[in-house]
Length: 275
Image 1 (cartoon, rainbow, N blue to C red):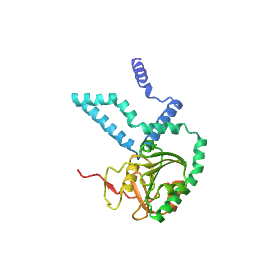
Image 2 (cartoon, rainbow, N blue to C red):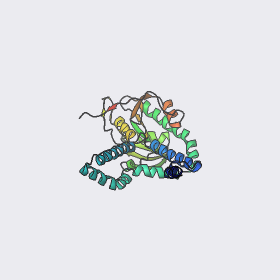
Image 3 (cartoon, rainbow, N blue to C red):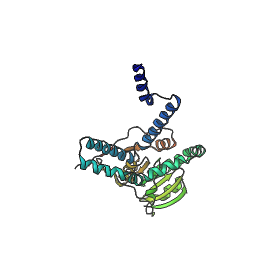
Image 4 (cartoon, rainbow, N blue to C red):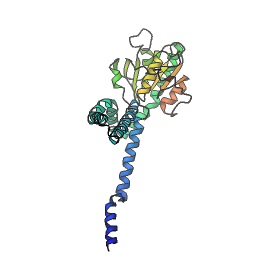
């Protein structure tokens, strides 16, 4: 009798480990999907680097607690206490863009997809014209991470993407030709904008400021940055810290329209700076 009671008590103690079939399975799948989408959203952005840093700090905190390092655990605990407020400030662009995407309906997304081909055609045509004339240019096509913080460095615009307008903006001696053009969907949202230069050492000395700015923005965001070299008249694309050079207008068209998922032959021309 006592053995039966003991088994009953043990079963009750571990009852929370027994799944409730459908509710628990659905809940686990939902949580796993949310975590997966969150990590997928962060991959290739500066936010991912911050998350890795936070994970390292968390491991350090638990090690300090286990080792009874009072001062270190106190300082790390203080950081985590106010870390939530800092995270809101640091992740402000990403959070704003994520909320904006949640508010988009499927109908609006289909509409934007239908215009994607025409936008790709216009940008590719502009790249071709600028390359033939040897005119330097840099165009950043916004991805999931918003580029609002860079608009204030130039001139805000609200114009439909067209090859004629892009070619005119980068005409030599025009007021906006030295900066970058920012594109969101089928609209030009900024011109003459200043982009962040890559923080890493560039091994290829032939790359100028435009290429360094394109690499810098591609390292911090998931934007696709197109560059026309003023010296060589070649077309390049920077994406996720990789530089694709010697591209044709057709390759630009295919990438922007979604005909191809990514370009082959990308090279990493940056390396950690020497201490």
